[in-house]
Length: 204
Image 1 (spheres, rainbow, N blue to C red):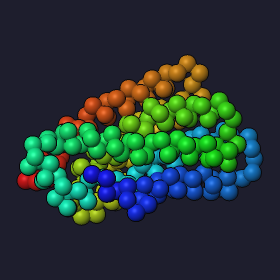
Image 2 (cartoon, rainbow, N blue to C red):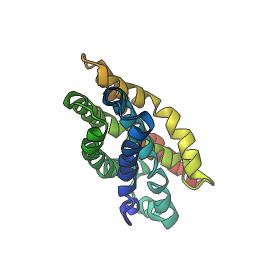
Image 3 (cartoon, helix red, strand yellow):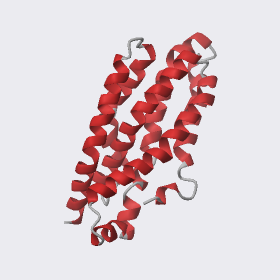
Image 4 (cartoon, rainbow, N blue to C red):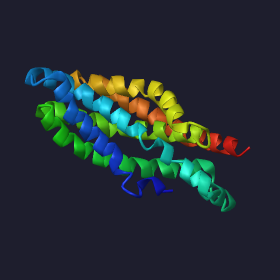
């Protein structure tokens, strides 16, 4: 279940993330203080939108190719398949994104403390983003206009991650990071079961 990583597709979210970081200063202006104050939130928004890009390739290619049916024939449950896919998706998405934060932060004139908080937030938040993306992919697999529908489903549900992630930038007590971690854990716990149920319902 790694078709979405072929053909350079894995680079698209990272390139999009860096493109947003490059264009944001042109929209805001050259004021370094303003960039430093707003850049962290801009990076979180870019990360959220970048997480949406591969959603239509997470489940649908395997469903269309019959890979999911082969798993079922071999006795591999849909829940286990979704859980394995979640781990693979996070490993392919989160580490490159966290590395891309470094040049993006330089473009936005973020200081070391802000970069550290962004990286900590992404470490805790990207598992939730990956889980939400995979759950959205399972819910929309096989539907017409799945790409557009995925955005309508995923973006509202990702608002808590965005709020807590951006809130951690100015949170010296770590409360926002704790809420971000709790939200990610909840999404990780729900996704294998809800995603598995969605895949089984799609076969009926």
